[in-house]
Image 1 (cartoon, rainbow, N blue to C red):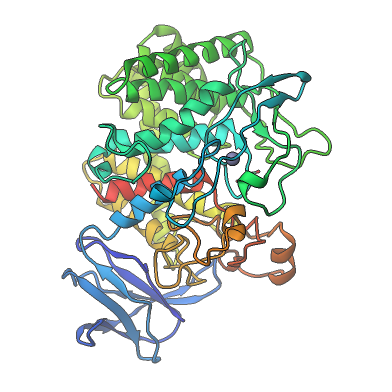
Image 2 (image 1 turned 135 degrees about the horizontal axis):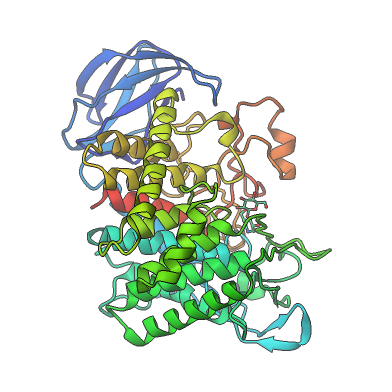
Length: 533
Ligand code: 9MR
Ligand code: ZN
């Protein structure tokens, strides 16, 4: 296949293109066989990240609803796609519902889970790593990824993406997800996030610090979650986890206030206790896996961006001067201010401050953040325009979980669009990132299970491998290409020198190329919610 398109579809008003690696002329054809457009493809030259010489077929002029494909004079056809309003609605629903399948400490019932049911998992109390006599009840939350661990920073980041998506685009969250709480008067995205937040509330120690993670010492074999009987440990408190924890509980306390004041109070008290811990522990408290432990490390050598996020959320929640002081201090440093991943959460500070209707932050802070967001967005627009595939990535950006980088950049572009009147270029670039994710890329995969004619279907996910069901759950974003694969199958099968965008395999054992995580789905929810509003 050498015509690559967004396999889910295109919005009628947006820019609509497909990428061809051969052929000069193209046709846009309805599924019924009728040609609606004919044109010359634009020669874009060599695309650096893929090594492909590419030609762009632009069919933006066609706005009529329907299912189409692109055909070229080299005799090739693209996968079919839709043009229409709402082409990303089912996608957003499945991306969000996917989190329900990660619920831990409960049974997944057929009513909600369909074929993907399983009995209760991970019900036993956890043991404190540092004091084995002490046990705590910490059931609940979402399995982080294809493994069964639960980690505070990734959890905070995923919930952060989702709560901001809901806050900014509430009209995109009307549809029921068919989860146990559906119909209770609360939007389902908030119901689902509450499942994670209730667990997070248990992850705070008596001093206010947040345990870095709750995992076994070693990753489980490929077994269903209810078969995993390994002992789970609460690993030591870290300053990153505690700051992320303060930030997300403060944010959540505002969001849930309208639905449940008592819950909002609990969240806010947790945030205050975590903040007090941060004040008492101004120095960086890192986390390293103890010898012999191979579950996720989520190590980070800098906690200032996490502290920045916490300060921004506490300021937005309270308007108190001491949080502004901290914000001012941290904004004076040389932090990047535009990231939304688990290592670097500074972009959330920008989201908090710049979308605060009450404008609690100082004019200086607003200006610093706004300038940083727009400068980065302009850089991303240029990258996107320079890429033959429209993706705002340089070859070296194809790291482990590169699709998260793509989606976080799309989030930043959406934020820039929200901040400006002339938002078309940002919006268009954000949409281009979605197109890349959904099939307009050099490996022809839609990186979301169940969405697109050629969607990847072998995610590295324990239940998917063990449940005996052929199809994976729909709506999971793959980690995506990684320029230096780190798993045995990827290392063996991807020849050295393969262009970064092509360092991908749809293989269940490729944990460095094809795993799923909660925080790779959550930014996709944010971006699709923007385009579904
Ligand atoms: O997503 C993480 C990626 O950015 C890191 O490079 C990688 C190696 O440290 O770890 C990834 O996180 C994994 C975590 O450690 C355990 N759960 C699955 C995560 C996704 O692969
Ligand atoms: Zn579990």
